[in-house]
Every structure is written in structure tokens, then in C-alpha cells.
Image (tube, rainbow, N blue to C red; front, side, top):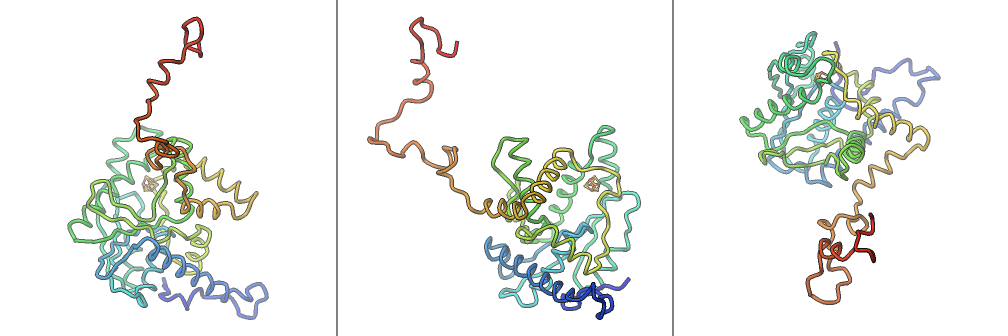
Length: 306
Ligand code: SF4
């Protein structure tokens, strides 16, 4: 298979004279530029990469991680800082996983890489009850293996290929199913405090990634080789977002922008905004809820809600 390495050689196009393809190279060029611009901006906005970083680029073989690696390699050439990129894939031993595909591609683009091997597939199929989705445990085990490797090899950043639509979907998952205003941040410290995780595609639309991946002919390896399905809640949220976008184009972008424009004083979390001091006329301690409710009785001595 032939792989193209630079953005300027995007797509082996159909006949240039073909009416239906006229203008395509220009559009692809614009798309490539937009992706570089969005990734560069996310890196700058969140301080994702600094001089001397050793970045582990997690590569699953899906369109998102291929695109992330491709754009980072382009940016690396002209970046204002020097940093190292190493593509790392975990071969989880799913039946039918085409082991030769990623090494072939990575050698063709000339990036350092490492393929780790761990049979998490046997673990999840043994542990997860029949009929339940495997993805949650599978992802946890994958993360564990990748993070351990990052620690052992001294990587200073771990780059994951989540994009704008993943960030928005996670926000609604947490809102609907966990009653939390919380999402998937573009940069975070891992729970054990050992790693800094970055999401350079945080501003990039999934649709753009799909078009780019197709144009670049990335050798995609489907994630569902194992036959598992993503969980129903995530599917439900995706369906809802797709419908919103169909009915009101641009809505997902609006929501994504809102995730970066948060006003704690306009929400209701007293741990984020000091509502107690707002308008307080003296420094005297205010009575708590218990003190307020203790006096909440009607004339018969019963609680007013009774
Ligand atoms: S589809 Fe299969 S390989 Fe992909 S995350 Fe789910 S369980 Fe893991």
C-alpha cells in the first residue's frame, strides 16, 4: 500500500478535468490548513507542548489517532519549540487484528514507534458478563498499559486523539447520567498524578477528521474487531447531537465554544463562586441550612411540607 507523507500531496485525485472533482484539491488544502491551525491553537491555548517534551502519541489505528499523528508531525517541522514524537500502539490481541498494518504505515512516514503487546482481549472476555459491553474495561486496561510504558520510558506528555465532538458528547454524558457539569478537558493530569495527558484535536470537528483520513488514505483498523459495541448512553447522546446538528447546523460548535466560556457566578456551585460573601453586609457568620429549617414549622407545629 502506498502512503502519502505530506499534507501538500493530499489525495491521489481523480482526473483533474473531471467536473465533479474540480476544486477538490483546493478544498483539501484548506482542510489540511484548518486542521494545522486548530491543532496549533489548541496546543498554544492550553500549553500542551513545551521545549524538550517527549510526547507519546497513542495510536489506535482509527481515523482520529492517525490524523493527530499526521498533523503533529507537520507542526513539529516548523514548531517554535523542539519536541520528540513517538507513536505507540497497544496490540490488545483482538482476533483478526492486522499486526502488519501499523508498522508498515509508521515506517512509511518515518516516525519513531513502538508496538506494545498485551492480551487484554482475553481478560475482558473472561471478566465481563455475556451481553455487556466490553469497551469500558478494555479502555481502562489499555490506558493502564500505555501509561505504564510512558512512565517507564520517561514520556513527558501523552497525546490522545479525542476531538471536539468527543468533548461535547462527554459533557452531555456527565450531565445526563452523572448530574455533573464536567467533560473531557484538552489537558489534564492523570488520576495517579504521574502523567500529563493532552488532546491536540480538542478543537477539531469529527467530520473534518473523517474527510481528512479518507483523503490521506490512512490504513484504518476498525476498533470493533472484537464485536463489542459502545455503551448505550454514549450512543444515545451521539444520536441526540446528530439530530441537533441536522436541525440546527453549527449547534455542536456553539456548545464546544461554551465549554471554554464558563461563568461560575452564573451557575449554582457555591464551591466555584463565593455566593456567601456576595452582598454580605457584615463579617458575622450566616446561619446554616439546619438553623434555617429548624424554624420551618406551621401554626400546628408540623413541618410546612407535611
Ligand atoms: S470495540 Fe473492542 S477493542 Fe474497541 S474499545 Fe471496545 S472492547 Fe476495546
